[in-house]
Image 1 (spheres, one colour):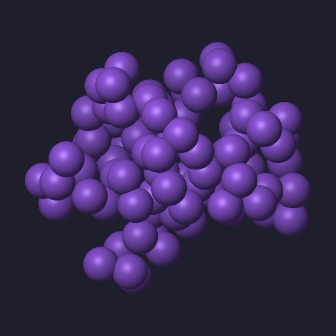
Image 2 (image 1 turned 135 degrees about the horizontal axis):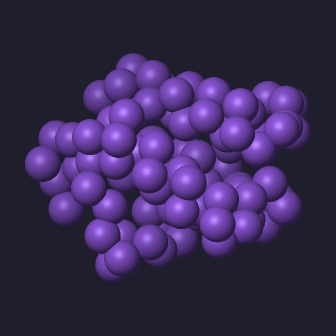
Length: 87
């Protein structure tokens, strides 16, 4: 499972880099993208749309918590868990 989490995290990071004009060094993987000033609420909507379209994971309003979306690390774990039928 860990390798799948790393793969998903790399996909999410690539999207963030392309979409929000930052470099890999600008992004702390274990901190909130909002707290880092990388995205705002509209950016979160874009990121959610990417997850739903490219990773085939439905994100419900109830999923939008710091536990699931508080960092790229947490998002990757959330996505892989949902793909495996968890939650």
